[in-house]
Length: 242
Image 1 (cartoon, rainbow, N blue to C red):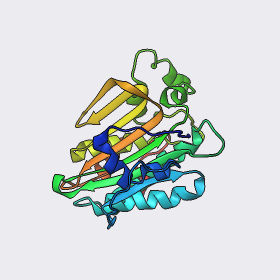
Image 2 (tube, rainbow, N blue to C red):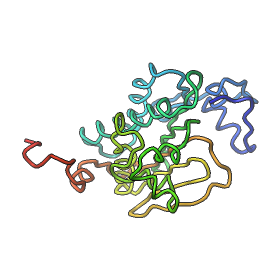
Image 3 (cartoon, rainbow, N blue to C red):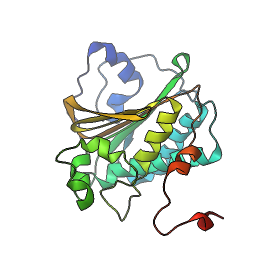
């Protein structure tokens, strides 16, 4: 991922500059803005140039999630941190370059609106190409939205390193919370909220993958209820949990 220029509509310039978008992209900002204290309310855009930052970034993003949720139990907090960690690592696992800027991530809360978001973006090969490596899933891609398929339980393109649970867990936790998960890759978009997933076409394609978690900060996040609705992995039963 590299940038020669970043052009945004005027209404977004000040916000993007305050969130350090140009700095993270390695470009001079087009204007100076008054900096505000993060105070746990937001995390400016962070660049990922090597894996050494992934653990730290996952902790920082998880801290925003924990701080801006009305209730988060220990299991949910841990599970979502692992899901975030998996998605951050995807920026490197599916990258098209060996070095340089592999991805960007940030977080923002809006207390008055009772909303918060985490966004993770990369410029890798994209979800459709990744899922095409899985023969069981590849046959569905001719008829279905690849981003929507990627949010399903157990779907993955690389069995050896990926559980395929990260997006599925986020989708169901956010649906129960009243939030939403958006996945953008190429010209495909999946918007997941409540019990429905909508597949739409992007007017301006993103060459890579963009994932947005949006949750309501006045409602609980609960991964336990999601796990209880999932089937056991093959070969496991009740006795494996005691």
